[in-house]
Image (cartoon, rainbow, N blue to C red; front, side, top):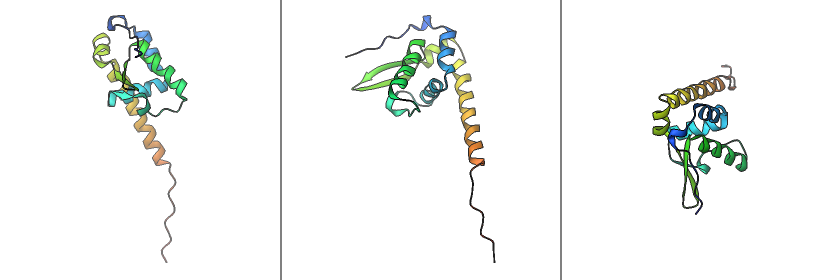
Length: 123
């Protein structure tokens, strides 16, 4: 069975982690794993092709943000919270709290602009 290569937690660099999380698709993957980990690649719906999604997961793995392993035929993803918090305390909390806040604000703004049918005039 194929295995994945992962960096040791001591070799994480802040530049690599921040670069990996700077992309909105990769930040979304990390945020979803922050909420519930582990998750299979197919469990996280992304607005990109399968090959592009594979690329994003690889970038996250090579930066040390996620750990990937096979479970049957599925590739499972685990956010490396303990490793990253030990190396960069508070980083994940800051990034994913901001992501949650931004998504909540965007959702609230979108719902505020939804058109509702006018009420019928009372006769």
